[in-house]
Amino acid sequence: MAGAQSTAVQDLIDALGRLPGIGPKSAQRIAYHLLKADAEESRRLAEAVLTAKERVGFCQRCFNLSEGELCGICADDRRDQHVVCVVEEPRDVIAVERTREFRGRYHVLGGAIDHLQGIGPDQLKVRELLERIGTEGVTEVIICTNPNLEGEATALYLSRVLDMPGLTVSRIASGLPVGGDLEYADELTLGRALEGRRTVERSEA
Amino acid sequence: MAGAQSTAVQDLIDALGRLPGIGPKSAQRIAYHLLKADAEESRRLAEAVLTAKERVGFCQRCFNLSEGELCGICADDRRDQHVVCVVEEPRDVIAVERTREFRGRYHVLGGAIDHLQGIGPDQLKVRELLERIGTEGVTEVIICTNPNLEGEATALYLSRVLDMPGLTVSRIASGLPVGGDLEYADELTLGRALEGRRTVERSEA
Image 1 (cartoon, rainbow over the protein chains, first blue to last red):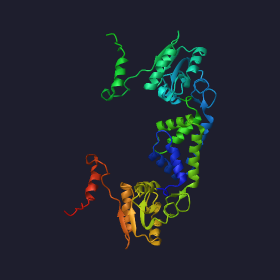
Image 2 (image 1 turned 90 degrees about the vertical axis):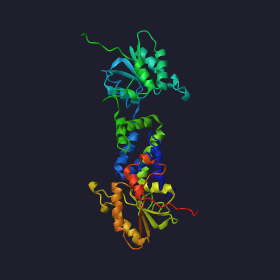
Image 3 (image 1 turned 135 degrees about the horizontal axis):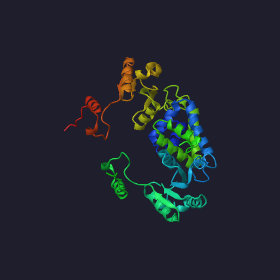
Image 4 (image 1 turned 180 degrees about the vertical axis):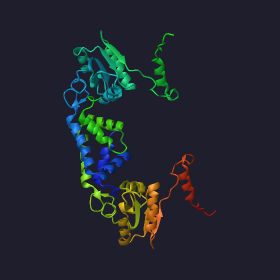
């Protein structure tokens, strides 16, 4: 194997293989693609990586990714500042935005409580959330952490510290995905779906 | 959505999404990973891309990727120059090397015959292969193109032009993968496995 691969190619494969979700095979495939494609594509990729890293920081208010002091959502006056959706990561902001159902603002915790990894409330932007609730006149908090062990632990913790008069705290619903199939649902999800059942509205006959 | 994502982040996601095998979701995941990780990781990735693109060219003899005029394999005197393994792409060289079964040299065609895509023998390094056979005293050619439509067409074409006295031409075997399951094999593969059956050696009783 030693002589088969040049060092620069191996370095590239290694660098690509360190990215999340990219195994050794994909890394190799991407490396060869880049070496075969025109130089412009490689340059554009390298530049995009460096530019993003250089320009993008965190929003001073909600800790979403931002190129300025405030992110696009916090800077937008049309967004309802009284409702705050609490998420784990910036990517979750994009996911919620995609629904077009939410017109409030966000608060990005930067992770979830995970005692095994040594991540407690102090490692997350919890203190900053409590401050915002005081200063921004927030009346509703929607806890939108992931429906897994860490996300649930975080939601439980938050629901306790957010027990304040005049503040509505809610948690997103767990249940069967839309278009999903009862037969293939795991029992935990189905259990949650049953637990969270809603009364069907009957139209007057 | 407009305000949710900064331009630099979107540019990075777009650049990553153009890579083979990376969908929009993976691109987003990788982008956020890079933005969260320390600057060193991004710098290392960008540098690896640029360095590889700058340094790596093709071996003058076999058209494998190479940082010098000759690739590591062609430059290695211990490799048998009389046996040439013909492959489609540089990644196939790595695959064959990994078997540790082959001690000859390679010839990388740079693709396979694909008339729909307008790729004929003239677009591949076929002329260069024929030249090598004349000048390097090659006595055996192993056609190691992929066992798909294009690879087979290429193998058929090569087996014809390589019909020369004193030159053994062989094609890698198609059949069931080692550890595979007869039940799950497609009929084409199983047919090939039957076609390519070998007589079992019987030890003398």
